[in-house]
Length: 368
Image (cartoon, rainbow, N blue to C red):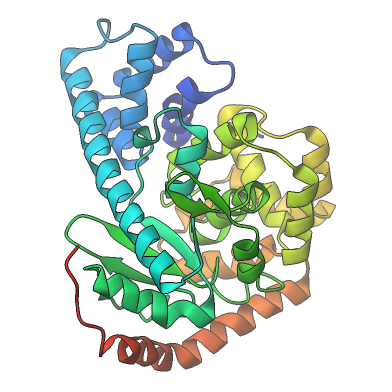
């Protein structure tokens, strides 16, 4: 695949080069040199924006390249590494508290996305920053889970735009996103939440998703929540996917069945195609063949990737949602279900917000 505006995307491939399956010390050295040649400040900022600066610091140390790195650059990466470690410890402590509190309140939950994946595919999970801790619970336990978080010292930050499927809670140091749907209602052909929670697994100090369900999230969440190629789609998520496919527990048949059940095989195909362009082949060819949509839709979505239209048209999110994300559903009926879900959300979002606030009105705030 040849992507337009290659100069604007060249940093993507340089930033990801150390994390390819075939990366060695020479590849890391060359990528660093080319990245710094484009501008030290620009390269460092790009790594930080994409959650890769702490990972880069560890890669340079592992390949004995620290001495060959400009001192100013190495210092900045080291500071990012230290910040990532501190943030990870705060998030881990918060998740341990939530696990205990949810257990006592009989709230069935599973951590997912970055806070979950990093514990399984990174030797040191603190290298993979997460902006928040994402937790999946059943819709009928939403109010109980929310009250439990408040009693643990978290405060609700209301946002009517996403109240159909999630709510954000914050304490002094950590943000928690409480989800009762994996995506906005209507994005999946059937509700996946209860089945995901039924298959959850204990992962040391918390509950996480079954491996096939975790891979499902890695393949579809960037498509709808981050528009695949846009600046919202942080490159650390591409590293997550690549590492999972190399080192995680794999059951492609099970994940493909889930994607078919949800009507989202096309979304997974697009995410895998983009990741493969950035990092080389990440999935078996037969998997891509089983996911690929019909010829004309494949060409249409390929054009969106090749022209990087999600980034170029980011100022017009409704256009991207209509022209791009609706086409990520497997059939017109699925796209119509997504539209209906969005319309229902717009109709009910104020009532949903008031219901959630009312549920917390008698919950005394706790101390974290």
